[in-house]
Amino acid sequence: MESYLVDQEILEQFADHLIGEKYPDQPVSMHANTKKEIMRVLDHQVLKNILASLTKEQGAELNRLLDKSENPTVFEAFFTRHDINLEEIIKNTMVQVRNNFLGGSNA
Image (cartoon, rainbow, N blue to C red; front, side, top):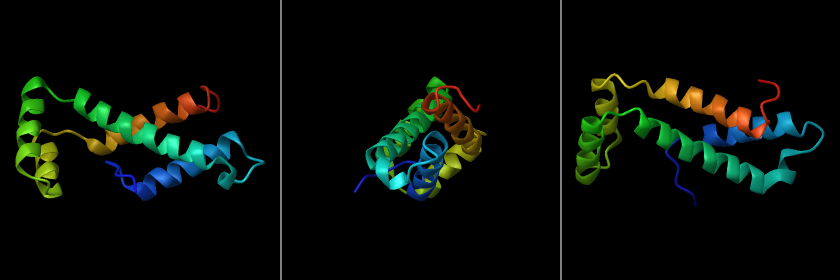
């Protein structure tokens, strides 16, 4: 089973929607590999964009937290304390992935 940073249900819904946009006359089930790839790309890009939003000091602090804990509330507190808007990063990343997948059409 895959492990994702973003909630798997959200990833699946996003991938299904994109596939439906790009291939409206075909069932999503015909594109299982594409769906997995969209989910992987989105999750990877979200992580990349989150890390890119951190200062060097914040990155070091996050690394220390990762070494000490896997508790999600610790990470939530970190992002809240540093006023890092994860929802905004995820939303912008979804738009970016959508535009790349659809080739910039329907943007």
